[in-house]
Image (cartoon, rainbow, N blue to C red; front, side):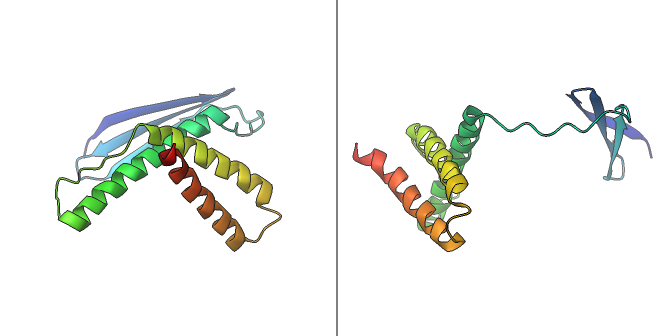
Amino acid sequence: MGLKRQGLKGRTVSAERTVTYLFSRSDSTSAMVSLDTSSSSSSSSSPVPLTALSRWYLYAIHGYFCEVMFTAAWEFVVNCNWKFPGVTSVWALFIYGTCILIVERMYLKLRGRCPVLLRCLIYTLWTYFGNSEPGFC
């Protein structure tokens, strides 16, 4: 039962270095070997939050992907089209990125002031407004 190296994943964080190897066995199981070369006296570094531009990009791509997948699923349900043609507009990137970033800010302001159901209603209304408003321009 020999092991062959399938992939190498390395990550360096401050003074800590972690190298992980993923091995694939011939019996269709996987083994992961990790080598941690961090010093025991180093303190844990706190995670660094993403920048606003990084979050906007993440939200834009997520919304874009969800819309393409939704339209593909809708085409299948309505017309039984097995090709799953999902479509959207390039403008959806900007719409989803901006709307979801605004919802994130709304969450930070409303999380201690409003109950969950009211916040859900506010987020839903904002999402409908944010998705329909650019279509009227």
